[in-house]
View 1 (tube, rainbow, N blue to C red):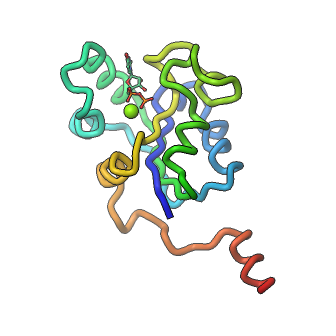
View 2: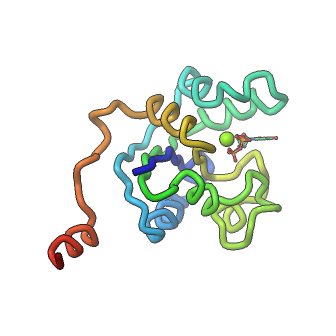
Length: 152
Ligand code: UDP
Ligand code: MG
């Protein structure tokens, strides 16, 4: 099953939106298989956003993502990388579709409350930055999985 890396960014945490943001992914039926709160160090932030090094917004991005705790998650589901990006909405909140997280909770591209990997390769890379393999709860079943098994 496909996995992605999702994080409630520091502005999401500071605004009390952790529950609201996580709920979007849970109600879609995606399975959260790892989660923790941490304040990214500069080293972690630079690894995470290595692709943006040298861009005009890079220094501000590193300051932002290290400015407070984030809630980091590994989320599993069918085509979850694309699906989660759809739930998050466009990077620019004023262009994000109504009903997406960024359209609903953010005003500026700089502070857009949530991160999600942009492809499967990025997801694997980002998951390995934030989680050790033993921190991922890979072997549990959702209630729906159990009911389906029972009915067989
Ligand atoms: N960002 C910014 N200014 C820009 C582009 C991006 O401040 O012009 C920030 C914003 O927080 C964004 C993050 O850098 O979420 C990473 O940018 P990316 O293009 O990867 O967007 P995302 O994948 O988060 O939608
Ligand atoms: Mg990105």
